[in-house]
Amino acid sequence: AKALGRNTYSFFTNEMNIIIQRRMEIEEQMRGALERNEFEIYYQPQLDVKNKEIIGAEALLRWHNLALGNVTPDEFIPIAEHTGLIVPIGKYVIKQALCFLNQWQNIQHQKYTISVNLSPRQFRDNELLSFLKNTLTEENVNPESLELEITEGVLMSAQSYIHEAVAEINDLGIKLSMDDFGTGYSSISYLRQYPFDVLKIDRSFIHGITLNKADCDLVKAIITMSHSLGLTVVAEGVETEEQLKLLEELSCNFVQGYYFSKPIPAQQLLDFSVNHFK
Ligand code: C2E
Ligand code: CA
Ligand code: CA
Ligand code: CA
Image (cartoon, rainbow, N blue to C red; front, side, top):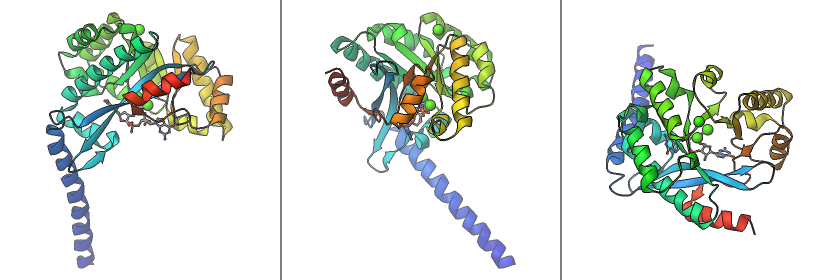
């Protein structure tokens, strides 16, 4: 029994070692990644359910490192958040996305919007507001064309600086979007407390809408509630035509998902949106 116990223990520490080593290597590589220009922003188009026209895109970060290969955001964002590296990386995302948006609007359509994900740590940066304001000016983008996506994780700490930052973002005219709606515990109460413009239904709910009535009813209720609160609704993770048709019946405003396009590089989005209107 003792031997088994020891084996279990060393097995456990080996597993832990692998996880910790991977984490440390990601952290180490991430420290120089901005300077080495290893990040790229991909864009996933968002479409109007009614006329299937492109209305904008979500900016999603991609990281390719020489030693680690491609690292997914689900793996590196939490580490960037933990180490604080998300602050400079997040600024890079905003700068790049606004620079691209300016081009995209000028080439094709002034109505296009870009949404950018903001994580909790970025709100502790005193310069967030001035950075947003200055970058919008430098890149010549109207604040209404920028949407910031936050999850309830940002709001959970209930710190007064978060309340203030969100109010100031809203005062600047930037749109505020609640991401991953339905996955947390208090999303509904936050909708009352903060000036959200957009609600994004998490893709775990969209997956089931054509498969079971409960998910369909739930999504229907979320859309009705959102509209009565004056919110625009985006469905995430739309993968099939059946889902799209059903969402149209439920009066969902916008969709995003593999059915139309995966997240793609900037140049591909330009091509996609040109061809889209041919
Ligand atoms: P998210 O904000 O919920 O982004 C949507 C994720 O769903 C993206 O994963 C996207 O590629 C994926 N997706 C879109 N359509 C479909 C679909 O039809 N089916 C399926 N199965 N998946 C779909 P991605 O790009 O791997 O990003 C994962 C998460 O990493 C994001 O989730 C977001 O929380 C975070 N993230 C990505 N970029 C940034 C960033 O620049 N800043 C911050 N703070 N977080 C980011
Ligand atoms: Ca998002
Ligand atoms: Ca607003
Ligand atoms: Ca989401």
